[in-house]
Length: 519
Image 1 (spheres, one colour):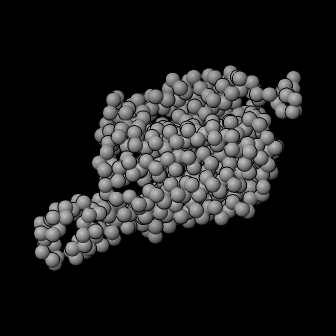
Image 2 (cartoon, rainbow, N blue to C red; image 1 turned 135 degrees about the horizontal axis):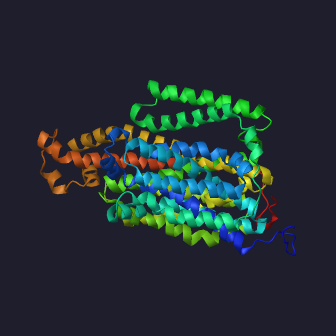
């Protein structure tokens, strides 16, 4: 029986479809949130499982590598299982893996479960964004995109406060166990309420194992290189070797995929100019999103000495601003041309990032408030219009693959952005520390005020080099001030990259507005 249509010829969307889609959004929210809440409890997990300090970061890295590999496979898995069963199976596996993580008694067991958790969670994100264009007619797509976007960007914002509260109130096991009940309910609702497309298991026979291996090697090697480069150096033998391996495997994967009749990932979407530009914008947005969520806790923890719960409370401002602007974003996307909204969004986002580049060691909630508000208002316009630009005019059969690639670009942008930020912090902090100490020796009052040295102390000090006692007294203040300046430079770098992304927007083809979009 064909779907019901309204007077305008659009298929009607039932309440059941909206509830099923909301269940998908909750599943995606859990997968994104999981990355954030675990960060706050890494020291506790390290102590409980006796993990070597230099291996602790693998609790996160294992998840992220598996997630990045899974994201581009979403299109293939959708063709094999159908959208409904892919989501149900992925969320069931994610929930079971969460239980496995909580029950882990050793480091290897935890890493194994994190890999499974990351792979299953990675398919949930692009599945939701492809569902926007597969389940809903053009007139309803802005609302669906906004719902998905709010869940996608809210999770990193509330993650620190949720993780901090759980860490202080319960044991680290509950960082994983909180996924169980929402996972079961979301999988159940989605399984019953989403459209019942039939799986096509015969599609599995078209799996190109060699392409899959090359893609896995390329993405895994790149992720590990980006993780290790800031500490080991970008020109170290290990990093250069990993980058070479990633490039060689990636080139082989692209060549084989473009020649295949049934590619594991359909790269032809990049032939569409709007999809390519949308993916570039998604990449840059990933740098800004991941970068801002990383830089704020670093500053608040190491400069302002806040605990995890206090950091989460301060960062909640961004999430509140996102929720407040969401209805406005939906209304504007129906009436304003996509390129204009995208330009406004990225310009505002760059402004919010740039304002954070003016921090001092005394900066706290009040000074962070307005930069967070500006970024929160901008994020929805950096996410929703580029999503429509990239996916809104592709044929439905190409949307799942394209959604995987679009979301992969955002995650890769985040990984590369974090590596660049860490590189700036590691390399520039010592330089700033030396310069600050030199200026203090010259008796510069402005520098003393910046780092928090009492002016009467500077006035009483005789001119000339600082003695050992004075240097020991000032060293903690100097180190914090140097960290602040390097963090400011990282904020500035991310702001410049966001501004640079605006150069691509005019080259996009004009997209129809709102209800005129045809999928």
